[in-house]
Amino acid sequence: MTTTGHAQHPDGHGAVEPQHGEPRVDDRVNDRVADLFAAARAAQSNAHAPYSGFRVGAAVCSESGTIYAGANVENAAYPQGWCAEPSAISALIMAGGRRITEVAVMGNGATLCTPCGGCRQKIREFAGPDVKIHCCTETGHLIRTFTLEELLPHSFGPENLA
Image 1: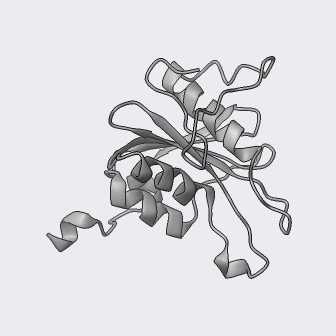
Image 2: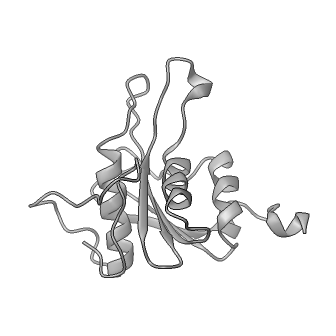
């Protein structure tokens, strides 16, 4: 699936691989972004979204090139659920990673799905303002790429506490 590492299952155990016969992701993206999209798609298929039906998959790439994926997990007590991005970040941290170099987010359908405000701040903890966040359709077609700075301008990060 990737030449730079293996996508990790959202629980951190084992690789997430695309299913045989899955459509190729958008031809406008490089192999790393294609791998991020494939990992986000695999994670999205495991999302727990029985209340909203809005399934989200996210994937983050570490400095080593390893890709970690996560899915949203809803809870009947709505504030207790969590988004896909923190799930992927948790897998990264549990594997010993500390830096995010690239992100992919995939929501339902063809509508643009960017990280929510809280997720933007969580990404910021492990990524610099120039990190790219790729938003794609659930079939892996790129909608738009943002930098973290575009999504979270003038952000507060770890260096503010140094």
